[in-house]
Image 1 (cartoon, rainbow, N blue to C red):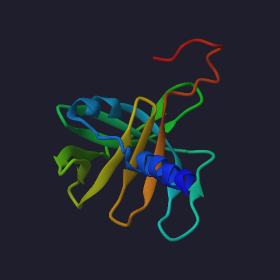
Image 2 (spheres, rainbow, N blue to C red):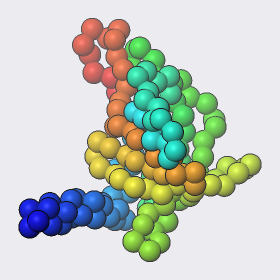
Image 3 (cartoon, helix red, strand yellow):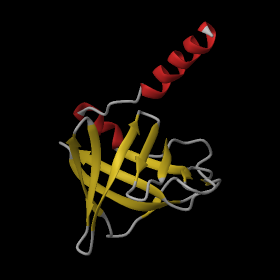
Image 4 (tube, rainbow, N blue to C red):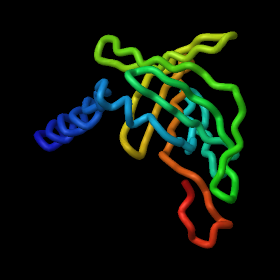
Length: 146
């Protein structure tokens, strides 16, 4: 019985240890993010093996933009003029990404943010898991891309 109680306490500690996003962490959003999977609340998760688009964030002082970019084999990206304004909002020990365009506004909870991982949850309780990525260069004979 004591072992079961100890195991339950340890399990609760792991569940309760959720990363708290701080204002200083917002700079970690900058760069290219590739979606890995979406965890659905009531159905099977969706894994992404290959991605044609990355999310690019450019943030400064808790605000910036997010745009979709298409990586090319030579290390460049195809981009267009479409982007979303992003504002980071901190409320009740949580962080949120508030997006806006000329046509819509929405928010996602910032669940986890490290140098290599990003997890956001939308209003439908879908969790989007991203990994940090960068340009692809298969044609540059090993040369670094800028």
